[in-house]
Image (tube, rainbow, N blue to C red; front, side):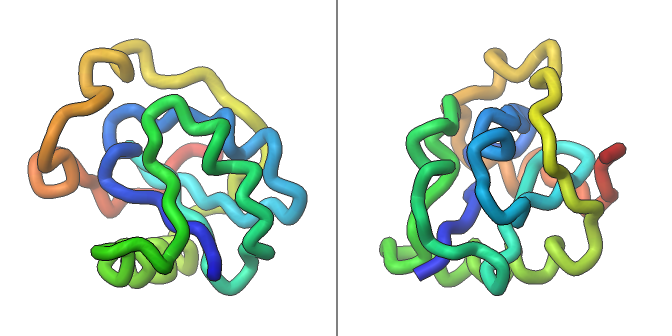
Length: 111
């Protein structure tokens, strides 16, 4: 049961979760993070650290879509192993609905 990142991360991109991951399975896109589900050891420590509540177990309803998105972009984006400052406007987007469709960027981050 790996954990996955959902659209709540888009435009928020807090990295508190990265700091606690014991296996460095986070990957950075331009405006969100993903977890490599094949590297995740299912410890769950990241879930509680996410200020945007964007991390869920892959067993939750609707998680299948996010599992595939996380897997796809973990192969394309650079690995992120340390906490970085959140975008200056992150709070503005926190809790907004339909962020993936509105704002998602497939571009890699600057790890």
